[in-house]
Image 1 (cartoon, rainbow, N blue to C red):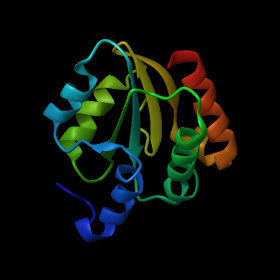
Image 2: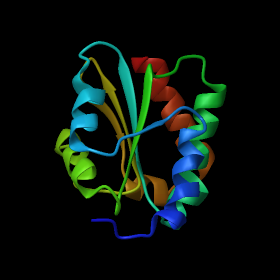
Image 3: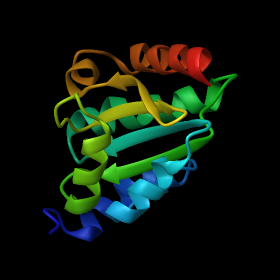
Image 4: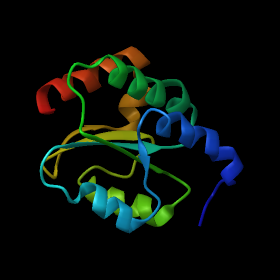
Length: 140
């Protein structure tokens, strides 16, 4: 069950989908997106909060636009909307507690890098860009 009306979150979703993120709507889509045991997958758990708007989404877009190495697949789920898909994604993000927004990088089916909400809240967008690009350089 969605917490927010779709008209409110549509432009927030579009902020990531217009730069290549696939919006995952069901648990099955989450499983399919993470099923490949080769390559890298960048996951953005999107949200309506201010730190997602001011830091997480801009940092994701800047990091991807200027990185030499990039993840092979970009996916996103929306906290407070498709609750079953988000719950399934959070199973894959363990042992990290539920956090939104957050950003995760998987390599060969394993979670290798995580930026939790408290990292996002406590940083400016450029620090997050540098964090992401460092992870891309190491794992992609």
